[in-house]
View (cartoon, helix red, strand yellow):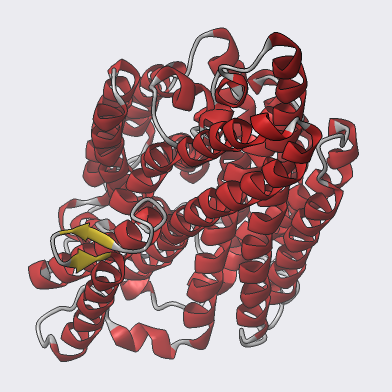
Length: 538
């Protein structure tokens, strides 16, 4: 008789790989100042290091969920683990920002192979009556990993270098490979899917063009990119490709990549929209927060990570309990409460932020954010996936995770471009006010130097304001240096405060989306006559 696999042991092995994937969506944020300095790169290039990972993670996921259905989730998950681990080593060895962006793209492909298989395995390993705690564990891992990145990243960046935020994945990846081989059952759905190559091409090209246009708009001053092609033409072309993708999915009679009929399920469609807003906000919020905490308040990477540790701890504690609770009460109210708590926490930070704000004063607002994150993931996944037919679990998992990652891609791009624009405008505005404190003949060189610093984002690097004092007499230079420091800190603070409004607004949209979910009856499951060792049918 074949020994039945232990579902919790299998889930633990899968969650280790999943933890590593989500860790890499945020661990890079804490290293932004270090990479700007050591790779001699601009803010736009470093945002691409974040965005390209999310882009190559999101685009193939609908396709990779089909791969799991055809070739077996275990085999596809293992292949993704190998690609992800090897790409992590490549990232750490990269000597230029261009090479790092390429390596991160391969990291994203590995993540795309792995992610859909985790939710599909939950539906296979656990019957509906026991799926809440499993979703709680999965949600706890998701929430914990997403916000543990800055803590672990801070320690690694300060003591070992930015490269180690990638090197750390190598031993973890090897352990995850071994545990997956030993503990995860070789489940074979054996669904003979056709692969929608045209759909993959249309969606991939469309998303890339939209993200490229949005993220690089500021760099090209929202004008010409090359020849007669402008930023808005690139964005428009991307939108057309995405419209073409939806139309093709409607008329593809074989097996569409995105079966539109699944969106007739109201909980799935509203849950997927909610996941998109969560991905947008949680990816975007860390970029301005890290810049504020390190470049304005002046915390080291380690201390910046420690500042977020209570948020991480609270989210990790709350999530498993919320997973169980979502089986007993309507999960949509938990999701709405979590979104509201996260938005409120970010709003309090935006109100508190000032160049002189104490880091300790931010802790209550960060705890509100942690509570919100802990409330969101488990019930959002449970409500969204719980109403999906088992035969569509793999496809639904791919769509759900793709939506969250697409939200992350758009969040990183939109926050990046808004932050760059606000930094330039805010620092220039503050410099105009500060220049009045200098003799008139030195004001123009001071303003020119500050302008160069703002446009090149050198305010995150080593000599933040040297350009503003270059060539000035010693007595004037000292005063100019003091004013320049004030300008940069005040300008960055104003830019961060303005930028945080965007993820807050998107979270409010998520609250409305979650409110549209259908009420779900609490589950009261009678104890079975005898425990069954059989895993749930997929």
